[in-house]
Image 1 (cartoon, one colour):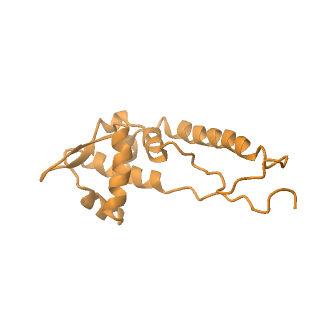
Image 2 (image 1 turned 135 degrees about the horizontal axis):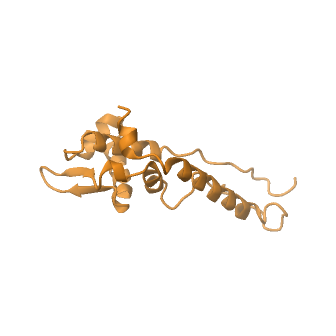
Image 3 (image 1 turned 90 degrees about the vertical axis):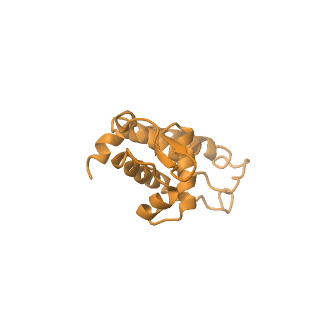
Amino acid sequence: MYCNKNYFSIKLVKSKFSISLHIMTLLAYYSDEWHTSALIAESLNINPVLVRKELKALKEKGLVESKEGKNGGVRLGKSAKNITLADIFEAAKGSTHVLNLSNNIPDATCKIGGQINEKLLLMFNDIDDAIVNILKPQTLEAFKNQF
């Protein structure tokens, strides 16, 4: 065997962006209303806890605002014309990359294993940047108008 007997595996790209974009599109489409996580979850057909998790990330980026109480909920934090799909992607992605490193720790004494994670992280940065560059010119308003 050339290096470590553990094989490299890439985790599947998460669906967080799809969930976040669905949430944001719903909020943009019905922009005059406050929406509960339960109502949003119905549209997504997922657990409201998962919606709240994504809403937290969107709120941290200033994309949504919330109001507590009986008539509370969430709505867009700014106009859909001023939100790009890249903004939503970056909120959903957080501080991780779209692709992930293997959970195993490569053999540092191996020519490949000692450098693989560093090389992969450079590539992952390029992949994330490419996605952002594709999404940056697209606004939430334009995406919403497809519905």
